[in-house]
Each structure stands twice: as structure tokens, then as C-alpha cells.
Length: 142
Length: 353
Image (cartoon, each protein chain N blue to C red):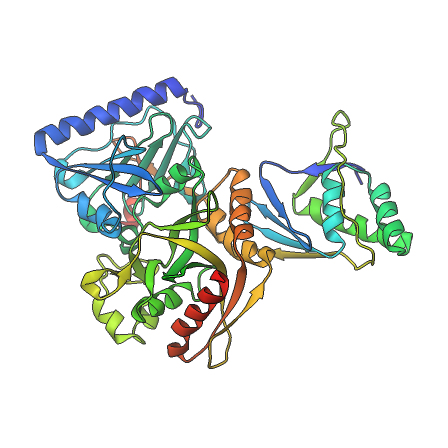
């Protein structure tokens, strides 16, 4: 597993609130709600911190089991990269640490996926271009 | 040249060629022009011939007159009436029309084209000169949803460049201000807004409107149309009697142009007081409760950004600014329709305090 990541911009856009991060994949139409410890995990992953460091920070802040937190971070990273929300950060690209609010009590990360908008991104094959140079509906379906 | 490799210079020359085509048609056939105001900007519409104008302007005829230098100039003509198409495009088409039918000949936002082959409609927007074109093979054949929400893609592109948000949402209000109802299709936005209009509230939108968070939160009406699914419309006989369906389409939603003639109050802008997430409660009486801005954004942003084919990542931040500017509520719609409008009035009052 790659140890440093970044947000898969510009295909992926996100917005943060205190208790939730909304992530939208503009390319495939999926959107996601990240809650509980997934919120600080997302921020720290997006900044390019290593998975082990993220787990250590959250475990220390919450007094949670370091092994449990590490397993949860790794699972979340797997999910986020599988959904193309995070990609591997090139070695040449330095992390961009910034202050992230950490919880005082640990709750497992929540990562909800919504796919109800995906049909909006269906592509339409261009079957014909007419004499004026513009795409037209196939004649059999007029 | 591959698709998306047109140079901006060639694109600009093509736009000039399209403008000259329009001017020649207008000189030959006559036509009309009209300027309307939206969000403090003047939008000027010019048509060659007479067939296309009503299909475009009927939904936005309620907007106040515009004045001053136009922020957007839209030129349009009907192919059947004028016997003229847009000039042949100088770019190569991709094998597959991108999602939403939006193609960027230069690979960026300098020139954007919306093609709806099934509706025989073409929209084109040139950002540098703030000019747009609308062409259809035959305005009489345009599906109903194009009459209800004309030039949607052009308005989406133009508003984004001016710190305005074209949002997927309904909007109604009273003297205290307006609420923006957000959520995906089927959440009850249109029904709620039409019921509110029937009860005497100000109507601004049922599906799309324009909102801004600064300098103070405000909503601008864009379309005065309202649409309900044909089956659902039958539950409201008065609205059904007002509905028109120029060309029934796959959405099966006849439309109503609200205004004085239909007995509805239509407002062109109101202060925004709250974001409202409607949901069908299963209970009899409509009620409301505060909710988080995160839930409001989750209801507003995906349908707005994904329906309109938005690609700019800053668009989500702009919508987030909007939900942070006002309180958010969940509206639990009751089965007793007569409780919807009073519930909304009470919500607006609570939000305005």
C-alpha cells in the first residue's frame, strides 16, 4: 500500500464541515459522506501524511487502540483509493501538513457511498454527423 | 486535429462567423431583440425570424427589463424557418459525445458546446466575448423540458463566471424572504413549490434558480415554469387545467408558466433565509426541524454539479458558502397538502428571526 496520498483532483472535489466531509467524484457521478474519525483521517491523508503517522496521532488523541486505529485507517485508504478519491502522492511531492482537529473520543470511520446520480454521466455515442457538420440522431431512431 | 485540440484563435474566428450568419439572417428575415435582467446583469436575446423566440423567452418573460451593456448576448434562430444551420464547425467530434452532451472543442472552457441530437438543439457559449448561440432544427419539435428550462447549460456556464450559482432547487417565499428547497428528483421540491404558489406564496422556481451568498444571501428567479409528473399532476385539478405539454418527452412532465394569468405571485428575487431539504414524512402534518449545513450541501451539491456537468472544483466551495450563509432545515412533508404552505410560512418566519 502506498504510504502517502493526495486528493484525486480535479476529478474529485470535497468540502468539509465539523462533523462531515462531502466528497464528489465529478467524473463518475458518485458522492460520499465521511463522518466520525473518517473526517480527520481524510484531512490527514489529503495532506500526504503517512498512514502510520495518521494512526498514531488519532490513537494518541483518543486513547484508542493503536492497532485498531491503524487497521481502520488502512481500510479507509483502501476504500478511498478504490473509489479513485485518493491517489498515490508522488515522492517528489512533499506533504502539506496543516492543523487538523482531532477528536477526543474514538469512533470508527464512517464512509457512505451514493451512486444515485451516476446515470447523469452516461455518454452518448455519436452515430452520425450530418452535412452541416453537427451530430444528429440516428435515422432509425428518429 | 483530434477532438478537443481546436486553438482558441480558430474558435474565436468561428464564433465571429456564427455571429455574421446570424446578422445576415436577421437582415433578411427580420426578428426581435430583448434585454432582461438577472442578478444585476443585463442579458440580451436576439432572434432571426419569429419561431424560436417564444420557445426560449416564455419561461423567462417575467424577468425585469435589462439595461446597460449586456453581460451576455444570445443569438438564436430556427433551422426550419430560416433554412439555415450554424456554420460547419471547424473541429473534430469525439467518438462519444461527452456526458451531458457538453463538448469543449479547445479542451478548456473557452468555447463550450451543448448538443442534444435527440432534440435537435445546439447551444454554444464563447466565454471571451460573452456570446452564446441557440439553434434548433425546428422549435415546434422541441421537447417540453426545453421549453421549461431553456438555455440551461448556457446559464450554468455564464453564472459560474460571475459568482452566481445556478442551482438545482426550488424556491418560494413570502414578505420575510425565501427558502431554497434542495434535493434530488422525487424529493418533493416541485410539488411543494407549486402547492406554495397555489396558497399565495411568492414563486421563484421549482427546479432551477440562481443564488448568491454575497454580499447578502439572495435568490433570483430564472424560470417561471413549474413541472409535475403527469400522473401526479392529476391530483391537483386546477394546476392540471393550466398545464401545457408542447411535445411530450421521456420525463412525462407537463409544465405551467406561472404568473398573473394563472393567478400566481411570481417574484424575481428575494432574500434567502434558509436552505430546506424536503422529504416525504409519511405523517399527515407538515413539520420542520433544523439540520446541519452538511446535510443541506449533500442534498444540494451532487444534483446541482452533476446535472449541470460542472467540472470546476471551486463550484462546490461556492455552494458550501451558500449553505453556510443561512440556516438549514429539514421539511417533513405531510400527506395533508393543506399543511404544506403553512408549514413553509412558519419555517420562513423562524429562519428570518
